Picture 1 (cartoon, rainbow, N blue to C red):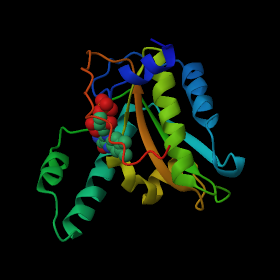
Picture 2 (spheres, rainbow, N blue to C red):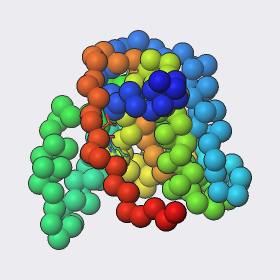
Picture 3 (cartoon, rainbow, N blue to C red):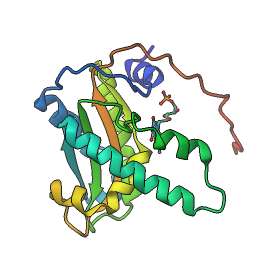
Picture 4 (tube, rainbow, N blue to C red):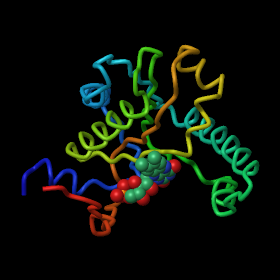
Length: 189
Ligand SMILES: Cc1cc2nc3c(=O)[nH]c(=O)nc-3n(C[C@H](O)[C@H](O)[C@H](O)COP(=O)(O)O)c2cc1C
């Protein structure tokens, strides 16, 4: 199979990692792969932050969980499964991964969500091609409004938080989750 398609088709979200360090040059290479993606009007407005410290990551996980639980409880129909899962003391939203990558956008960005989503997928696919595992962490979203987290990482006030990705060497083989049939709604010929 074409190696790019093979990489896309074998990537999985990894939730169990070894403690082995990911070399900083490798992390940097992945950030560059993220930044290399297509981006609206070529503003190149994305910026990254990296956390390699496990104690800090645990603190950020705890804060993100609290923020998400608070937000969930304010909804008309709170999702009790999410509340139960995030309430577990031993649940770390970053799965004790050795590295977490956060993606932000400066006010220059024209389509920040799209730019960051593309960057995140570039990072995840590039990491997979190197034998590294990743997982996109939507539960980290609350950190975007956590002033302590932003200050610790030197994120300017006007930068928008967009994404979090765990990174590390997988400690187990994660089965590939099959996809449903592709739905094609229309195809005008
Ligand atoms: C926007 C978004 C948010 C996600 N948030 C989480 C998350 O907080 N925790 C988690 O374990 N996985 C998260 N995932 C990963 C999905 O659960 C995963 O991609 C999906 O189950 C398909 O599995 P696969 O990536 O192994 O193919 C997220 C994925 C996306 C795209």
